[in-house]
Image (cartoon, rainbow, N blue to C red):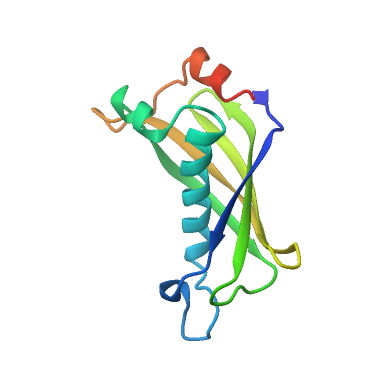
Length: 138
């Protein structure tokens, strides 16, 4: 298992369609924020966008997602989604995340997602090539 520590941030804003009947962000949207941040960071920070994985015949699937909610977010809140690769294993990555409310820097939630790399042809797990691991070792 290879360990990583670089942390990257993406700023997003809570949209009207993120709000639930209790007038705060619906719990499922937090993982959407993580996905949007990872997509941004793959291109901007790691210099290997999702489109490059797809062109090589690879994709990513979630096999574990864990979220711990601390404070609610509301309509219009600006948020910082901070992510980092905690570990790379044979066919996957363990990504930690934090979502903070930008105006007070308070933690709204944190957690982790374990992604498995798959072949787009077969849908089966694929070993992560060393050159991809090297690209994500920033």
